[in-house]
Length: 258
Image (cartoon, rainbow, N blue to C red):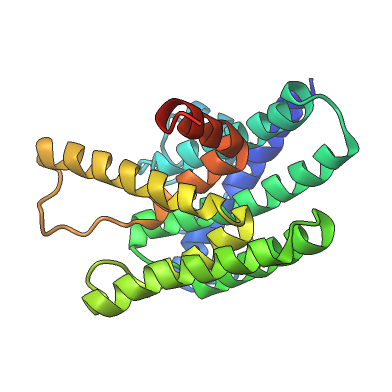
């Protein structure tokens, strides 16, 4: 029952995220009624149900009959899944403990920011300061003050993240990565701490290489094409937040033989 509630709650937030991404790009205020991005008609009550409205409207605006971008459905589904999976992981898989409430709260809050970063970077090849800086502040203070993560671990991870991407930015003069990736490096460090940031970076580059080769093989990209790296980092953070200990144990035992 609760897992359904978390899925619905996540889908509702996914709808909000879609709206936020659009209005940030168009530099519009978040105040005011929702509207169709194509015909600008104000949307009614039955146009705004997460998932259901997209399906029952046949993926078309009720008013102008233009197609609704499938992004709206996918983001609502994905955010619902992220929230439902978080509940399952912290309260079904790990059983019920008071500390898990705090971990779940942090997981939910930080993933809202990560999903926004993921979508915006994927669509527009840009990481917004107005999104990433609040996420950095929340990650640091929540981990340090509430989850009691070691301060030195957070600071080392933050410095490693900044230096790793900062050096690439300087050496390539901004050709390999964007300046926003440096901020994401700081954010990652404050989310997962040391040494887990190394695991995030490693997984992100493996995923990026695999996806890049796939896109090249199906001729969706050229060698000179830009590919946003933020989405790979965001997905890797999510993996490490949940399965970091399992991945470390597998690596140390299976690969290194410890």
